[in-house]
Image 1 (cartoon, rainbow, N blue to C red):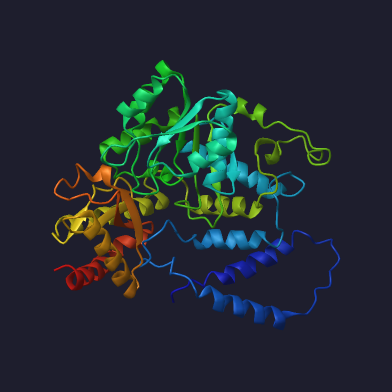
Image 2: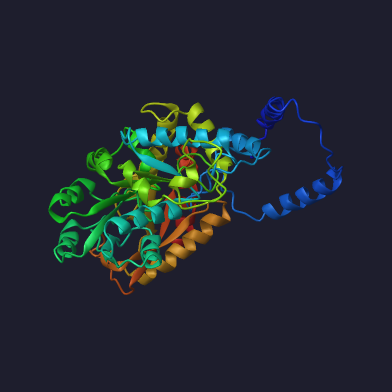
Length: 450
């Protein structure tokens, strides 16, 4: 069985249990349109076949990790109530579950006193973080590395704040010397450190960035939307470990449970070290917040209506898989990194391929061998298609040629970018499938690289 279905029986049992929570309500008439619903849903199933197999280890392209069955079940179960985590009127139980789940995430960074909530995704979470930074440092510049997520520039434009990209080093991390030159101009209010870039999984040198904070008085916003959960794993390189150990010193942190947290889309999270920033969220509503003296999540978030289902699914997942070192969750995450290392070692030992650098997390960027950037780009396209022909789905990454100058000194950089191949080995099962993945790449290389 390729699609897990056995747990659907648990959903039926849980729904009967849920129904018992409303014993005094009279029955309501539900239209008998099961056959029409069936026809539509079967048509949906037909339409959904037009997808890549995101759930399978042979999908190693974009950042698409299947939600765990417990997350799917909890999300679906909550839809019979359809809670809204804006005000407690619309999501009493799910709001409480969100607060508990977010507190567990904050513990990853040793934060006991904090302000935080879930969002519709990492972009919204980063926007809230930079919005607060802009209010605390009005008109001052936001900087992030050239390999930071492109939304930081867009968010800055939306907030009306100046933005500047910081050049990267040869491993796609923020170049601290370049950062200092920008800081010396006295314009920066916020530095965004990326803890796991979406391109290469590179981790910015957070200890070195934090060392500049006292002199230059900037806020430090950590975008760990992709890489945040790796704080739990025990197989990071020492330099990367130092960056994660420094994360508690950030002013705000973003993490996306819908990436490595086993959740359905969309589920992001924003955390602030200083709870007093909640004053900036304060607003009045003529009809929303009267039913309880407890904190309504809408009072500390920019979004209004938000799916309580996301909180229910996250709470259930963290109940099954506590966020602790050497637990089932962290062990699975460590396997993702092991898979990337294993594939890197295969690539490094094969002269038909070039790698950029060892993976810091679980993303590997590589390319077929060639003497010119244009040749490598052309061969990457061919390998991409050949792998897809055997159901192995990779991603393409247009890597800036200047960053390759020292990595591939023998390559003539006749293009501004080089098309490389990128694997996101996000599933723990990828470790067991490395041999199969390599077999497909080996066959494709045998046909195309002579």
